[in-house]
Amino acid sequence: MSGSVKDVLLKNIEAYVRSVAPGLIHTLNLYCRRTAGKECAELFLEEPWVFKDLIFNTYGSSSSAEMIARMFIYPVKLDLLIDESMEKLLKLFFKNPRELYRIVRDALKS
Image 1 (cartoon, rainbow, N blue to C red):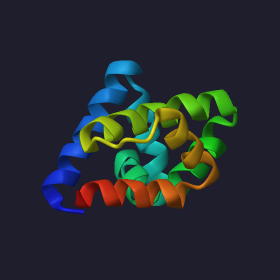
Image 2: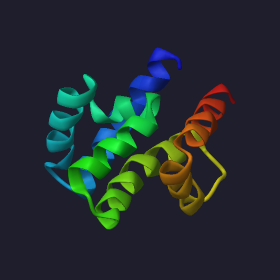
Image 3: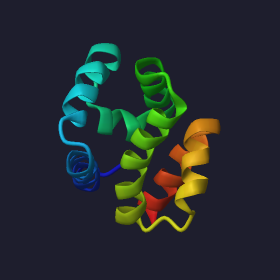
């Protein structure tokens, strides 16, 4: 992933999460840095399977995990013009995060 595109995506994810749930990104980043050594947006882009496990272990409920996943997926879908529906991307995040990773990587190449 090119540095400038990645930087824009990281900023847009964090800005979107802040706009929807003020304070959440700060709390999530504490957990992400402590458990994975990365900010959450970076973890989501580079290792969505690790991010998925982290939010499930932290929040437990599927509705909370789904809300958080939506906040991270939505700006990526918009920025990269990904054609798949939010529901499909959300399902991939929970069922096959490596496929979601592939879709994001392919969109970056386009």
